[in-house]
Amino acid sequence: MKQMALDIGLASTPTLDNFFAGPNAAALSHLRLWTASTSRSPVPSYLWGESGSGKTHLLHAVHQALQEQGALVGWLDAHSMDPPDFNDDWTAVLMDDVHLYNAEQQHTAFNWFVNALTPLTGKPRWVLAAGALPPADLKLREDLRSRLGWGHIDALQVLGETERRAVLRQEADARGLFLSDEVMSYMLNRFSRDLGSLMQLLDQLDHYALQTQRTLTIPLVRAMLENE
Image 1: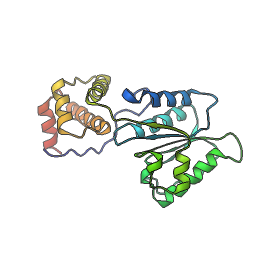
Image 2: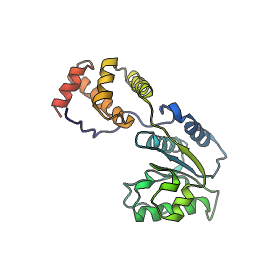
Image 3: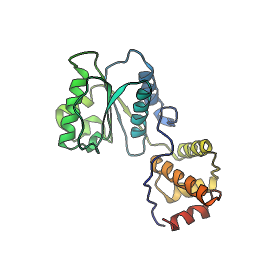
């Protein structure tokens, strides 16, 4: 079976509302409380877990929620090759995939962290970071690694198959797309079980079904693969 090229974005913007928490309800509750608060705690937070556990979704969701409130937010990830200097107007600093940071990105992350928590003017800013490993196991410069580990820490778990099925069903229903149990099983058995990849696969299938004016079936999935 040919591997699909999943090169398009998610169908919907990641939000706290469309995050299927499952075993990660405590982390979601913490982020909801923080983004909704008018007197936010400056204690930093760190999310860790393997690929597909929802770390990036949650960081983008927090970013979205803060932007909707009119807040400015600093964003840093492993793809940020020319990050800006710290901006004192930021409400929060978000750092994704910290385990992949190169030396320059680690320097930026440390600078942002220090400036966020000890600003020259105004209140301390919140730092929310995420990585694949717990802080103690991160291969980062010690001053950054230790700071990532002293605040609120949540270990995220990958959803089980029943929960992944529920997420796919929820997303398909939101699109008005009928996703049969047979097609869902085919997706789970033949493709990556990473939830982000599954959602992108569903997005491609939805577009292809619309283009071909066909219902979503296993033969449709096969036909799309043949046209890749």
